[in-house]
Amino acid sequence: MAEVIIDTYQCSGCETCVEICPDVFYIDEVTEKAGLVSPSPYITDALRQAAAFCPEKCIAILE
Ligand code: SF4
Image 1 (cartoon, helix red, strand yellow):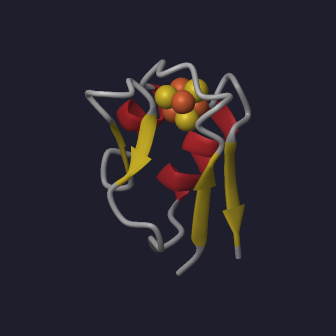
Image 2: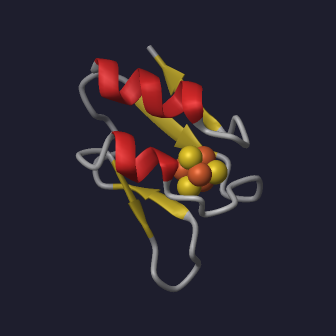
């Protein structure tokens, strides 16, 4: 498992991470920012892709 950190200040709420990896990310309806379904998810290709494709580069994976 890894720790995933979202810089919610930088997050634009674009939902790219949710589309790629809905097991880990969701959009908070109140803040309209990305949040974590689980703070310590297993590392998957989808998780890595979500971080790579985040346009704001605000997803960090700490292994
Ligand atoms: S892809 Fe990045 S900017 Fe877009 S909602 Fe997810 S964390 Fe926020």
